[in-house]
Amino acid sequence: QQQRKEQRKQDELSQSQQIEAIEKQAKPVDIEWIQLNIYSSAAYSALGENETIIDELQKFKSPELDTQLQNNYGLPMLSYRIQALDNVITNADEEDEFEIEHPRHQRIQALIEHQLEQHAETLWQIAQHLKQSALFYDSELAYEYRMHPAWIDPNSEYASDVQDDQESIKSVTKLNRIHIHILLSESVLHFWNETQSFEIVEHYLRSLGIITAQIQIEHHYLSQETAYKDWVLLLAQVSKQLEEISLILNVDSEI
Image 1 (cartoon, helix red, strand yellow):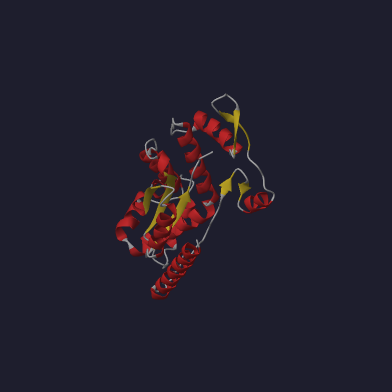
Image 2 (tube, rainbow, N blue to C red; image 1 turned 60 degrees about the vertical axis):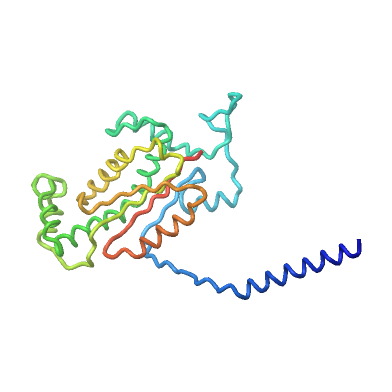
C-alpha cells in the first residue's frame, strides 16, 4: 500500500512537471482587437427595452405562464414571451401586404421590423449620406437617384427635399452601400423565407430613400456550438469594410 501511494505521488508530480513544461513552451496568444464605430444600438426582450432590461435582470424577474404554449399534459408552460408582439402580429395579419404563414416566422419578422424602427433616425441619416455620396462620386448611382419617383413627381411628399438636394450637392465622406446582416438560429433554416424577408427589409430601406443598388442583405444561421466564433468573424469582417456601413440584427424567438 505504501509503495502504491508513493507511486501515485510520483505520477502526480510527474504530470504536474509536464504541465508546467508545456505551459512554459506555449507561446502567448496575441490579442486581436476589433475596432468598430458604433452609431446606434438597441435591445428588446420580454424584460423590456435597452436599459430597462438591466433593471429587470437585477430584480431577478422570472418567466410567466405562457398564454399559448402548452406541455404534453395541456398545461401552460413558463416562458419569456414578448406579449406586445402578439398584438403586432394580429394587426399585421389584417393590414400587411406581406403574408407570413409560419407563426415563428411571424414573430421573428416582427422583431426585425421593430429593430428597424428603433434605428429609424440613424438609418435616415445614412440614407441622406448615401444619396449625397452617390450624387457627388458616382454618376451611375446619381442617375438612379434622379430617376427615383421622389425626384420625378413634383407632387411627391419628398419634392421639396429633392429640390434642396439638387441645389446643394456637396462633398461628403464616400459611402457606397449599407449591409444588413440578419443573424438567425440554425433551427429556422428549413422554414425561413429569405426572399420574403429580403423584400420587407428592402421595402423599409427604400421608403427612407435608399436605392436598391446600395442595399445588401445577408442572412446568417448560427448554431449554438459556433455562434461566438461566427459572431467574432462577422465583426472582424465589418471592421475591415471601407466606404460601407453595416446594421447587424441578431434576432431569435426561442420562447
